[in-house]
Length: 214
Image (cartoon, rainbow, N blue to C red; front, side):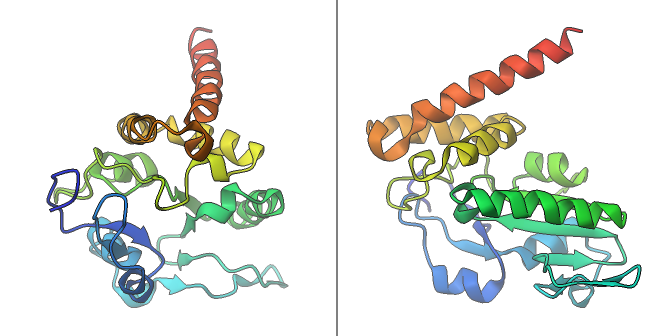
């Protein structure tokens, strides 16, 4: 049972089972961690685990060799899955590398699915990210991914990282609401930066509405 009073066999995403086990229980919520292999096996049951290539160079494409290493790659599905942890929102150079690497993957017709650390694989999130409906009940949308004890709030991000977070989190309204509610409940703007995030979100939502009205 989590601190939020919700029972779930699924936990916060980690790069693999070993890392998930070492990370242990999340201090803010009491949730466990789950290696993404277990999620992928439910999302793509027809693909055996050995078909997912973990953290290996992209290799040779059109004669050129690429050293960049996506988190997970499945050549059979032509899909790459990247798990973007907190550093991807703190470091401007890392943000630019993500943009550049994704252009390479997409050049060779791979679909790139990026999973931000503040979004968990709920049924709604899986449908948004992968375009797949999973019958099993996955991670609950109502549990926040960001908290003071995790030191992973918007306050720890660089300005471009918060902007990136806003652009991504608006695609997942239920988890966006859960995260904002949890950050606001802490009543500590200095350590949460929740108002900064809300300001960026308001800009993003205004932009979406403006385009939708055309």
